[in-house]
Length: 446
Image 1: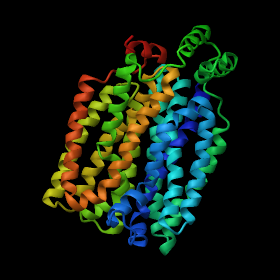
Image 2: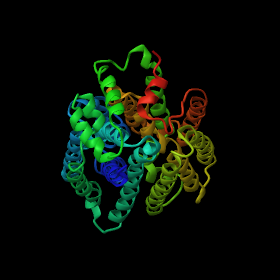
Image 3: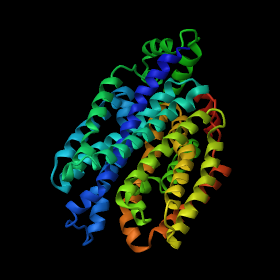
Image 4: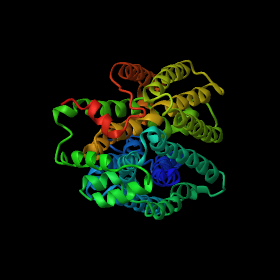
C-alpha cells in the first residue's frame, strides 16, 4: 500500500479543516471591536441581539446553508471539485470581510466563508474516508479535526499578535483578512489530489477508479472492491429517508446534536468575553484564549492517536465524563463568583474532554456509517444538524448571559452531556477497523 500518497492526499484535503477552524474562531478576537463600532445597530430593539445574530453569527448562517446543500456538489461535481470551490469561497470571504465598513456587508462576506465551512464538513471527511484503508481510517479522517483545532490555535495566536501590534482600530481587519493567504495556498494544493475512487465508481467510471486505486495499493486485487462499488452504485437513486436507513439517520443527527449542546462553539466564539466575565483582564483573557487553542491541539492529537486503538465509543465515554465534570464545575464557578486561574483551568479541562471525545469522533463517525451512494447525503444531514445548532446557540449567548446568566447556561450544557452519555451507552455502535462496505451491511436494517 502506498502509505505516503494516502497520507499526502489526506493531509492536503484535511487542510480544509484548518481554514474551517481559523474562520470559525478568528471572529472572537475582533468581537469587542465590532461590538463597539456597530453597537448602535439593533435587532428587535436589542443591540446585543443584533451583535449576536447578524455580526457574530453571519458565518454560521452560511455554514448552515453550506451544510444543508453541500451534499449536492459533493455528489454531482465530485469531492475534489467541491473542495476547490470551497478554497475560493474562503479566499473571497477573508478579503471582503476585512475591507468593508458596515455590518451588513461584513455579514455578507462572512456568510460566503460560512458556505465554505459547511460544505467542507461534507466533502473533506467523505473524500478521506473513501481513500483510507479501514485500519487507519479513523486516524486519517480525524486529521480533518486536527487541522480544525490547529486552525483554531493559529487564529487565537494571530488575534493576540495583531491585538498587540499597535494597529489600533485596524487590528480587527488584519485579524480577519490574514486568512486569505492560507486559503489561496490550500486552493492550489487541493488541485493536485486525484478524484475519489468510490465517487468515480458511483458514477460508473470504473477504469478511472481502478487507476486511482492502483496508486493507493498497487498489490491489491481490485475486482472484489469494484464489484462492491457496482452493487452500491445500483442503489444510487435511493433516499436517505427510507426506513432501512432510519438508524443511520438517528446516529448522524444525535452525534451532531450533542456535539453542539456541549457548548463548544458558544465558548470558542466568546472565549475572551467569558474569561473577562470570570474576572480576567482583557490582555489576560486573550492570552488564555491562546491556551485554549494549545490544549485543544494537544488533546485532539491524543484523540487522533487513540481513535483506531481504543475505538470511537471509548473516546466518547471519556469525553462525556470529562464534559460533565468540567461543565458542572464551570457552572458552579460562575454561581459562586470564583476568581483567579480556576476558571481558565476548568475551561482547559472542558476543551480537553471535547478534543479527545466528540472533536476526534464526530466527522470520522458520520463519514463511516453511510454507504457510498448516500455518504454525501448523510454527511449533509449530520453537518446541517451540527451547524444549525452551531449558529443558533452562539447567536443566543449574549442574550442568555444578559438574562439567565452564565451559570445557568453552563448548567444546561451539563445536563445535555448526561444525555450524551446515555446515547453512547445504548445507541452508538463501534466502527473501528471495519471496511466501509461491511459496515454498511451491519447497520442497514433491510
